Length: 177
Image (cartoon, rainbow, N blue to C red; front, side, top):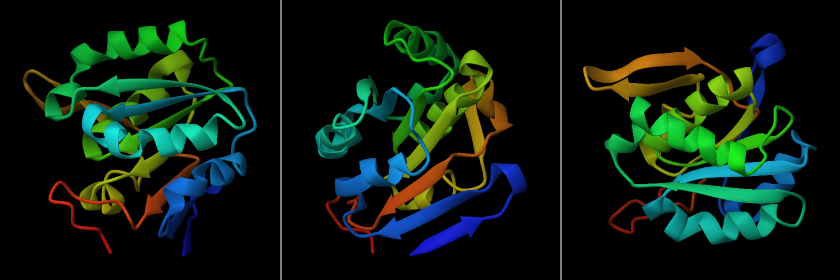
């Protein structure tokens, strides 16, 4: 299924399909023709889906993976310098792409990084939790936490595309449907 979010120049498509992770690279090619991609994920999600995604992406682009510890603590503003440094080390430029592979924490952080790194670079959301599929990947809400509270530093920054794979599993192994 394909949904179109009509926001004028910031419009994007949401694709919902079983097994989409296996051909995510082809879908990303419809919105990105640059040279490099940085995948931002967490250690749990990347363990499940990272290799499949990277194998497809590496057919077309130079890729780097930035793997964060799972959990809300990774969405901290204190995590940003490390992520920015890794993007710089990988040579990610304004004409490159960030792919967020994970739940709401990863989607929020990666989207905020995309909105602020080099004053904004393109990104694609691949939400892997049911909540992220219906909330954080849609609408462009991106943010990080401060010690004083959640989502206190943020922006509205739209993805180029959202890819929702109905075969992603929750932590109990149940497939979302």
